[in-house]
Length: 250
Image (cartoon, rainbow, N blue to C red; front, side):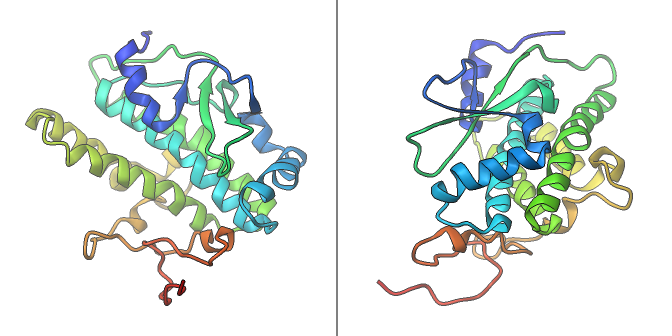
């Protein structure tokens, strides 16, 4: 077992990791997201005001978009540092500032001891991915989908887009060595294409593969609509929205 260095922790702050509990906001334990009463309370008492909508399907989608940063955080740490964060639902909490108008939670881990690969990095990588997806994200998606009446396809694509963004951002970094870029490409390909369905808690196929397709004009259009426009006072849509529409006039 190992620990993250101060430099590594600092680099992970862009994926919203924090090492001290907030004192001026809300703390939502990961396990609370698995309970209907806690989700309903979160939606009705906090998120409908932060997100400008009382539609539970929309709130559920926006919640998972925020939660998707966990995937980017854990995978970035896995690929960049060969360190596996304990992503157990019971090991983390979402912490927010009360004065944050758009509700962007940070991730606090009770235990930040990490695993490292031994002689078989591939087996270690699969263990990190399985712990992240099968034992956490897949369970969250199933529960939010059921509680919010929102399609799992939307929620999985919400996760996928941040994984794509994280890995593609790394590959665009000209300061990274060719050797490191090879590892990034290998991990990226494994996560989104070659990792088995079982690693995601599913039976049929990797749920990320179908959302990865070529960009047009440097934009990868989504396959599903994340419902963000319900939260916008002007009805604005994401740049990647698959629904063609005219931009609202000012």
